[in-house]
Image (cartoon, each protein chain N blue to C red):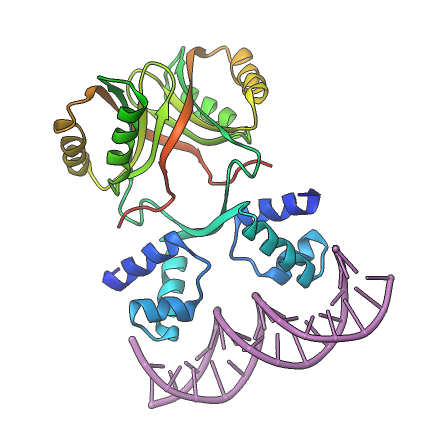
Amino acid sequence: MDRIDRKLLNLLQQDASRTNADLAAEVGLSPSSCLRRIRRLRSAGVIDRVVAILNPAKAGRSVKAIITVELERHGEQYVRRFLDLAAAEPAVVQAYSVSGETDALLMLRLKDMEELDALTERLFRDESNVARYYTTFVIRTGKETTAIPL
Amino acid sequence: MDRIDRKLLNLLQQDASRTNADLAAEVGLSPSSCLRRIRRLRSAGVIDRVVAILNPAKAGRSVKAIITVELERHGEQYVRRFLDLAAAEPAVVQAYSVSGETDALLMLRLKDMEELDALTERLFRDESNVARYYTTFVIRTGKETTAIPL
DNA sequence: CTTGAAAAAAAGTGCCC
DNA sequence: GGGCACTTTTTTTCAAG
């Protein structure tokens, strides 16, 4: 993992649709060496996957919400069970167990408020282990990247 | 935006490195029609970009933290200024202004605790408009996807 | 063992129907 | 939307450093 690998990863994190020849030129390598490096990074698992990122508004999911959850019983198995339940919801894009006052944090991508209503009903009505939950809405997105700084 | 478009988007959100011929076969289209659709979705901006997703641990960024920030003055221009400041930090991967008790929420990808210390120093020491901030750590990741449900 | 050049294979592109 | 010729890109091979 040298300077060129990091440079390649940075470029691919910004735009993975660029051609190998193009990338090779930018990092100053021959196309074959460049491809070898990328394949190595992929099979080593440094590059986990290549995905298409959609425009949330144009995909009809403009509402972003964050739910912090406090459980009744905080034991690891309870937290795990709640996370599994939350992860099963398509609208939940991130589900974490966290330190501090609350036990879990969910990041949601919603179509509208009705969908939020339906989701909270499903997640919290039958889930007797949830003590409290707080819903927050994203007003403005200042930054949203999938790129990990190297 | 019909059923086939949605199917294509779902597939591309999971894995954008698949070949056009492969995708065409899966959605039951000829490669040329399939490519036309994908290009249309791209130029329409539904597909915003195609990126490589790294394994955080293997990229040396295993610590995830969330900081919620309460500002002294809550006006729109102050929130915007803070978000810009936060967005400039490479370790900040998501920066939102939010509703409720706090004004902003930051999602961080960190190498270690020292990096967090340095970042909070930069963001909060000279920023006289920050009233309070709370740092939370991600203990377990139950789900983490870039895919928007369709 | 790694690099680069060139051939071979595969994919993407554009125009026709 | 599908079929086909054309172009570009990826991938393999192979010789040289």
